[in-house]
Amino acid sequence: MDNVTPLGRAEPAPGSAAAVDVLIVGAGLSGIGAAYHLQQRCPGKSYLILEGRDTIGGTWDLFRYPGVRSDSDMHTLGYRFRPWREAKAIADGPSILRYIRDTARENGIERHICFGQQVVQASWSSAEARWSVDTVGPGGRPQRFTARVLHMCSGYYDYTQGYLPQWPGTEQYRGRWVHPQQWPEQLDTRAKRVLVIGSGATAVTLVPELAKTAAKVVMLQRSPTFIVTRPAEDGIANFLHRWLPAGVAHFITRWKNVLRGQYFYQLARRKPERVAKVLVDWARAQLPKGYDVERHFTPRYKPWDQRICLVPDGDLFAAIRGGRAEVVTDEIDTFTTQGVRLKSGAEIAADIIVTATGLQMKVLGGLRLLVDGQPVDLRRPLTYKGMMYSDIPNLSYSFGYTNASWTLKCDLTAEYLCRMIRYLDRHGHDYFVPRRTDPTVTEESAFSMTSGYLQRAADILPRQGSKAPWKLYQNYALDLLTLRYGRIEDGCMHFGRAQAPAAQAAPVEQARAA
Image 1 (cartoon, rainbow, N blue to C red):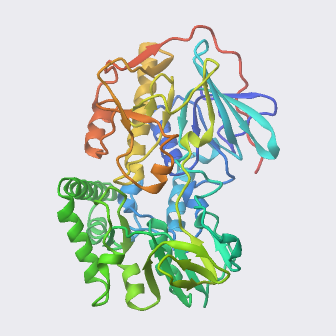
Image 2: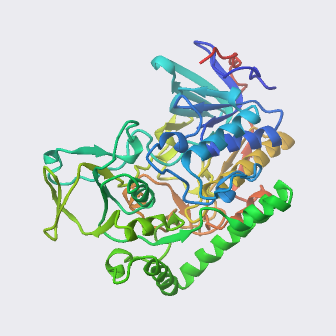
Image 3: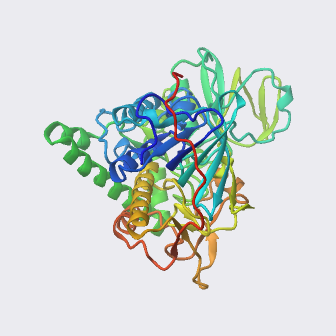
């Protein structure tokens, strides 16, 4: 039943509709992982990956700013099926990108990818029990793909632009503006005065890296962030990999890190004052004597109300101690020709201003969704097990944890989708659809964190329910038991058959060389 020619990069014939069993949207970390699981667990199923850009990697190919790295350890951010073997657990972006691309190449996934396909609309037909997915392909050419199942791995933010606040006086500034999401390849920061606006993961990554060559780097923040130091190398993992088979070492390391992270998260939620004090004390111990820790490193919120920032080997604190970097906690009054004037009256001069001010969220890549001709407002369905939507058939999506590595949940989601596909085949069903049938389930926000990018997107984000299976508990161990071993027929999942045979669609043709 596999209609994909096993040579070259897949591309539909001009004017045809490419028909496969599963369409995956996105060739980043989660999309490549989903393809692997599909090949291993549903080997008879055909699939394609639609990728809007012209290369594999998603986030890890898009972000090119200095020092870009993971903010989770690669033993959990990496795939369960492919051990991370490099010494550094907190890995740089190019290493992660190489890992993703090697996974795709070694498992024959590359030939299933259609590049340059911007997905604009997906329409479900109950009569045919199929999705029709419209894209804008290379050269602006419209194309259509059809599939039994649609799996979205398009990430959670807008790839075209990051978030930029509306500040007064920006038109006056005569220096260089840079947003990390569009970092210029030839930007030279050597011997320059650099102002980084922001205090999240991107800012704390950029500052120590820029401080290696810039004349001075200032990190300007409105309020402090919890920051924790962690060794770039996992000594236990490296020891285990020297003496044990790769699979065994990977299993032990992965669970060590999962359980340690889960313990810390639960402790932070149950005893926030105690954990906050410990985190602030850790920061104080790495800063110069007499440093104003209360002002610059004591957040106003509780730990894990926002994601905690990780700095490998304390590089940010080392840059501050060495005088190469400075943290300023204040608010912008206005921009000037030379830099910014703060509400305190102080001024910061800068040759380059880096706006590390966050992301713009985008649900399902911004595609238009229709079910039997009716547009779907994604604010109305409830999320099911953190991977599906109520009343939308044969659709799933990958979205990682906010309190742990992204790939942990994405791996489980792909496994569960494969279980569901096999279940449909065994029982003669054509589609699955979660239905909200329990009147006692109430709606609530799908995210408990107060991060700016989540708050800005509150009006476009879907909601979750007040109890399982509509509620995601941000707990990998619990999700593993539920998604890998729990019953598929749980009273909320419903099944059906197509009402009419699907229209004949053209198979996927062998691609021409890109």
